[in-house]
Length: 244
Ligand code: OAD
Image (cartoon, rainbow, N blue to C red; front, side, top):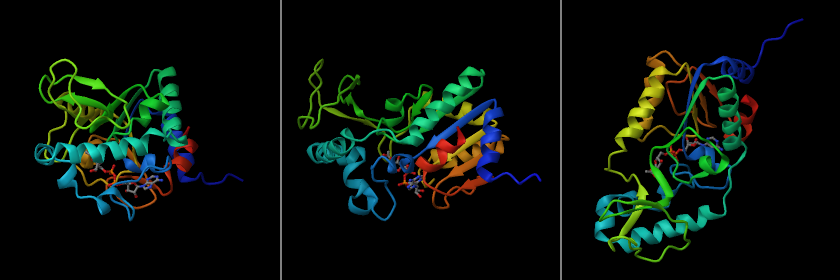
């Protein structure tokens, strides 16, 4: 007697034959590494005001306060490691490369865990907390000091450094956005993992992919994206490894 396959089996089956897959991740994929999300009951934005800490105006007003907050976050993240969901995405990318299919990973996370896990075709839409950018010469460099001296200065031009993060009110890197949109318009399958889907432009990515013909799967313990064909409800670290 044949049995009906489960939604996870169906998604795994589709993934194994997809030619172009784009994945979008948010803070939820790193929740299982012990990193707080932004908008849950214990989310960072419940305890901190984004406008005081994550805007260019906040940095101009009080760079030391902003750097103190980033030092606190760097300290929190320094000990965290990729979890089975990050690693499963690396396996999926590897399998797709082997069969010459395309894989793009777009993340809103700045924690660097996808890169640490080994993801290669990665776009960090909101930047990376381990990089700094000079407010004078614009040079971007990796800086893993914890804590970073406050305020930190550029070793080439002497001007103040800022976190290489896209703050509220700032534009995303235009090359990153073009590459992300290209992948969304041409993918046949999209996975949306652990994002509340409220911050643009990533919030529109699932609808962009769906309008272009992609099959969209959401992995999240709670409902968020209205654009998904299938919702796999559960923690990313439990569900994503089942798709490999
Ligand atoms: P949010 O905190 O808004 O949303 C986190 C999502 O993860 C929610 O939908 C949760 O239901 C889901 N979630 C929680 N635990 C999960 C788990 N174990 N597995 C899977 N999903 C889980 O985070 P983002 O959508 O990433 O911007 O927020 C977008 C942006 O807003 C962030 O990049 C950040 C913030 O302001 C910047 O830092 C520039």
